[in-house]
Image 1 (tube, helix red, strand yellow):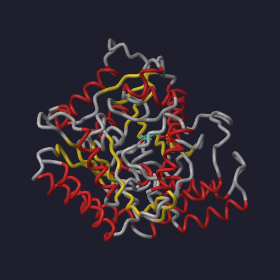
Image 2: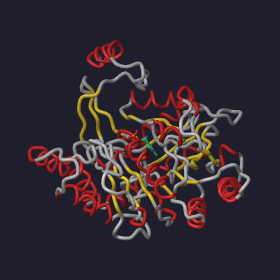
Image 3: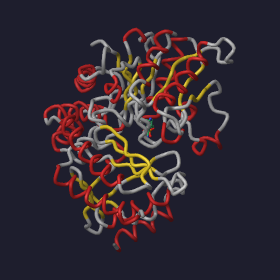
Image 4: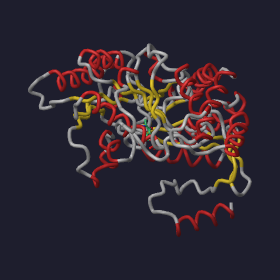
Length: 432
Ligand code: PMP
């Protein structure tokens, strides 16, 4: 519409060239509620990306918003003074902590972004092990600050900024489709590589500090590893007495139909950074939960001005309460299955679909061309079709060839059906 056009033109003049705005989707946003967004020209869109996994409880969730408004009038910023908001959130996070983590995990707040939380995990792992070798995975995305960028796999993100942290190794992440391997072979390749690095004294990797892994790779393409991958990593970490750091920044707070994606394989992390949906209605907040045994930092061991914004903390607690009260984990598992069932029906008749993957409301559809190579253009065409018909979808993947579908967990079956009708049409219209 005309108003969108005007704002877009203005943005192109005064905003940074770095904005990753898809210029083939020319809309400017005005407001949002639940699982819908409205642009400045009054067009409504079904939200199938939730601000990349931020709006799990929906835009402007009234139960969260109420507490944020109240807290904002009372007290916003106090650094580390005890507040009810802060202690409530720590207790709430302990209540939903995955697996065998004790009730006495520690939670450290740093800066508000996922990258900030990752920096905290790097410091925590080095501090506790005395090591400096970091193990991460190919295709991983852990953030844009220098430490987090070191752990990130994609060359496109980091090549202009080297040297970053030096002793980092990226092992292959199990990705059977792209590797042309069976699930078993893909896991074996990953696990062997990590084991050799740590256990072979001639691997050149002297002092491991930890293993960083996404339980499902997000930016990398909603890559769901075979179920025995994380348990085997857990074993290696335990045997070698180094922390397993499971990055739940994108997958956490219910996104995959469990509180944390590691629960799908009953693996307990030692350290668990989270951000994104933790801020409830999109307030910036990150936190890193870690096992009490790793709580060796003395006072001031990890600092940062924005370590704990009281309204954002209230938002986090309320978001978790809301998910509990409305059984949104189960709801998202059901709607996620519905979504993938429909996509698999289409896939059966669409050779260009290489795979439909996901857990809960975290779904990826990978597109390949006739030669089996990544097909990025078709994803772009599908996104364009979707926005024109009122659904906003995203992309992911090392090659941008994965359609990423991740609506707010509060989405109703009715909106989901309408949205999926359009996504299915979009695929059928743009593939042969
Ligand atoms: N880890 C993962 C798994 C992520 O998906 C992201 C963001 N996409 C980050 C870390 C970095 O978070 P932020 O962008 O808030 O720094």
